[in-house]
Length: 87
Image (cartoon, rainbow, N blue to C red; front, side):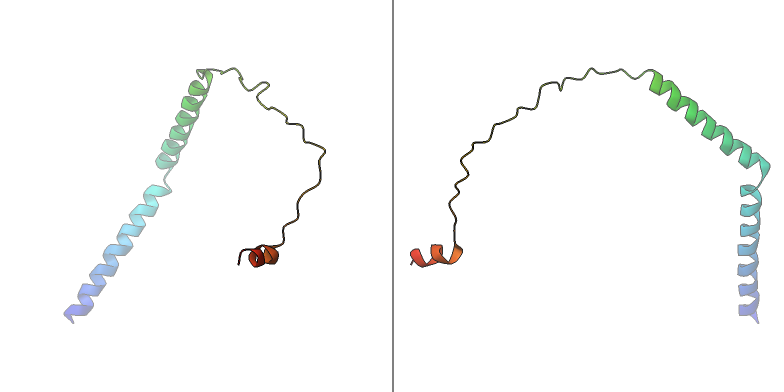
């Protein structure tokens, strides 16, 4: 009998906690406060973006193109022949 009463009290406390948490979360004051905080964050981001320095680009002519030679004769290597000569 005492176990059942203890479990009933635990379940009742959990239900009360969930009820008050949901009531606060869905209340108008919480919605207003969260909306105001989001707006203040956006204002801070906009103020910070206005004060950012613009850095000039220093990457002009940084790529050097190398001309490839027309010599297309490549030595063909064969793996097994390399092993045979290494004996």
